[in-house]
Length: 431
Ligand code: LLP
Image 1: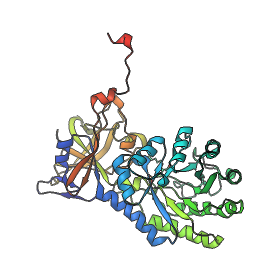
Image 2 (image 1 turned 90 degrees about the vertical axis):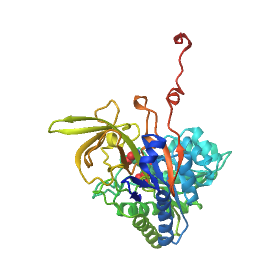
Image 3 (image 1 turned 135 degrees about the vertical axis):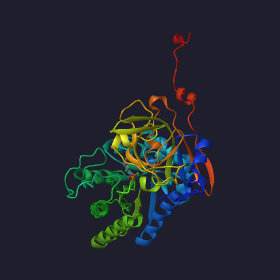
Image 4 (image 1 turned 60 degrees about the vertical axis):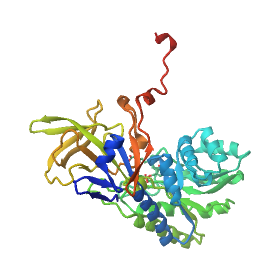
């Protein structure tokens, strides 16, 4: 989790930087990414594999959580590869210096251009459906490609009674009933180097057992693949999904426990089937970058509805954090310039967008708020900036990287002209 301190003036400090100061220097809303927290999470994944697994492994960062040059460069320096879901994410990883061989391309409707880009840079393509396989086999005649196969294993993490064999109603991956045909197809096309199977069973999960079960279910296919002559079948990707603590009610397992559960399931299954240990991959996003970032806002107007609710509005909202309005997601906040203020008032923090549902925090206890206060929302690193929009023509915020008391801009704030960058005014409307 993010380590914060409070200085003598009662200001919140992140990464050795005074957050009130950062808000003044860089403006708000501001994403503040703590490099040490991000690196620590990467290291925890890597160390957990070293501790629990005797085979080869690679941790990939699911860059859909937040893709930019600085983050890709940091996670790569920690030894991670990149899970990308678009040409844009592949491009970002490559430009950040990640070698193509460490990139895995996902997606349920990849374009031919995206698959070709991945193949050309030596990335692995995770085939999600028959169209992927068709495009891959056409491309591979010229350019051999490493391929994994994504399966929807029919394991539901959100129910206790998960179904092991049922058809999972997901748009991603092959249904298990198709897998035999997929493997046979791959066996007929040697220029497609089929290296293994992939499954991702969900996100923000606090459960451990289903991830181990999914790994076991996939491994049961490896003897069949080898029997079909797919001799390169030696990688297993168990996806991501480990949840994080957004509020005190959340109690996620530790990274070490999550990795340990999967490693034990894989090791046990390999012993049972007398299989060599596969190269084990996982691709967490949220648990790597989520806790490492906080968003700073400036408090503005207020509205009191007698005996119902007191609203305070901040200078951002659903355009920089769409998770509350999209998923009813809950967050925790503090007032960065009032950390020593022990008073509490129940308030609702609204965003500035023209949408009633644009509420960041409902009925939270905070020190009495005033115009100009610096409100900080925690755990905004995952699926905030990456899902940000320009709704209401609000420029997207800047992001700074903080480390050892230094703050460096990693994403520039959009300008009013940036908002017009792609607009074209027809000539006849110009006078
Ligand atoms: N691998 C695959 C194939 C995925 O689909 C995902 C997430 C991940 C890995 C990373 O999962 P994580 O470790 O971050 O849970 N926008 C939503 C989350 C969507 C997750 C999509 N897939 C949210 O804000 O909660």
